[in-house]
Length: 107
Image (cartoon, rainbow, N blue to C red):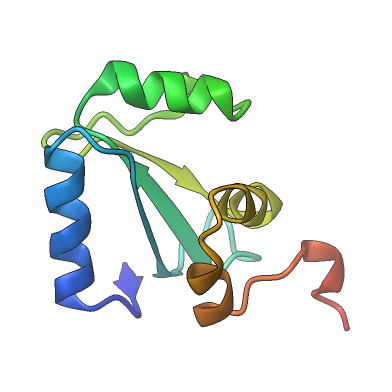
């Protein structure tokens, strides 16, 4: 389930993905398979070749793309999520969801 994202943000992400742009959507999330993580960033692009190339350029295995038309995406969690958001200069995502390295979680 997704929490903490406004309908306008979701619609903007869907529109960008549909146009073949690589778009980022971060939201609160819970999955019992990953109980340590409370957020996910969905990196989407309807152009699968572009999304695969983005994954490869970021050291991510394109095999893990969720190929769910019309919004294929790759889920980022944990330290990888934070590293990519920093590299993409999406500091608003980092600040809004109070993301920090996992090593800081016990402080």
